[in-house]
Amino acid sequence: MRKTVGRKPTITRDGLLDVSEELVREQGGSALTIGALAKAAGISKGGVQYSFASRDDLVRSLVHRWTTRFDAMLDDAATDDPVDFIRSYIAATRTSQQAMDAKTAGLIVSYLENPEHLRETSDWYRGIFDRLAGTSPDAQAARVAFLAVEGLFLLRINGIDDDGLWTSFLDDVEAVLTRLA
Image (tube, rainbow, N blue to C red; front, side, top):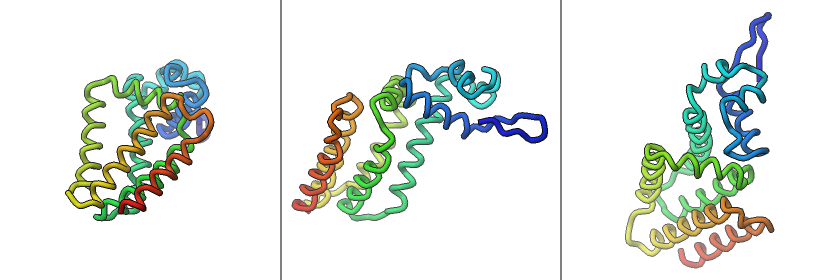
C-alpha cells in the first residue's frame, strides 16, 4: 500500500482502492469507513482523506473503478448488432461477477441510495438500452436476455447464489438467446 521513496511514504489512490476492495470482500460494505481504511492501509485518516474527502467519495470512486473496468470489457467488443452486444455483455458479466459477492454488492446497493448516484446509474442503463434499440426480433431477444442477466445480478446480490448455480443460469440465458436470435 505504502511506497517508500527514501524515507517519505507516499499513498496511492489506486492502492487505497485495492485495500478498500479487500475490506469490502472480507467484511462487507458497512465496514468500509475512512477509519477502517486508514487502519488497514497503515496510514492516518488524514492520509486517506487526502485521496478521498469522504466515505461517499471513496465509495463513488470504488464503484466508478468497477464500472470503468466493466465498460472497458464492453468497449473491446463494440458492435451495432444487439445480439452480439448482449453476448459480450454476458461474457463481461461472467468475468466481473467472479469477484462479486453479496458483501460487495451490498456496497453497490448503498451507493444507489444517493439520488445523484442513482441518476448516474440510470443514465448508464439508458445507454445500454440505446444500444439495444429497435423492433427487430433480434433486438427484442437481446433486450429480454439483458433483463434476464440483470435479474440474475439482483438475485445474486441478495445472496441467492449459495449453491453456485448463477453461471449455469447465465448459460441458460445464452442458450435461449441463441435459439431466439
